[in-house]
Length: 158
Image (cartoon, rainbow, N blue to C red; front, side, top):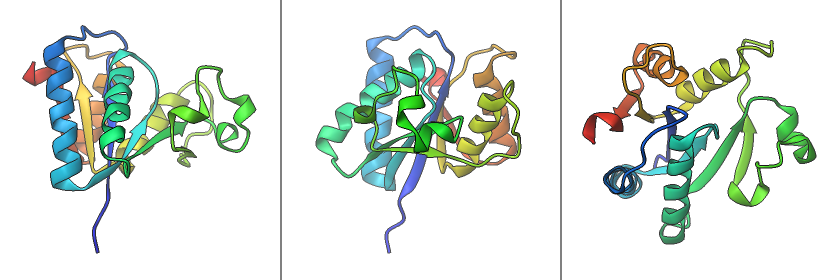
């Protein structure tokens, strides 16, 4: 039985997107798909790094039609009631919308706890994190390290 793996993405809201970054990220993702059975890609949808990853996975989906783009909603109502989703979140951009149950039910830190649940579900997390210790991307990286999830910080390879 073949095991299908989950990959997710976290990075700073604003990054410098270079052709070198795009090529390295695409090469890495293609290797994860072809050599390591990654078929499901979780997105949270905030920031330039997330957008870049979504664009590359969408390009790769043309070649590898079996991969899935999954948007992980921070509120369960977005799964059952698509009309409640933000206008920029389109059904055609993802194969699936899911909600991962989390311990925290408040509003203020909902994104952080949703991100923790994404990390716990992932077999590998690709980060773009520089030295911004107060950033949510950095907090996500620290959480992934504590949970012993495979982490690749692509910012280290540019």
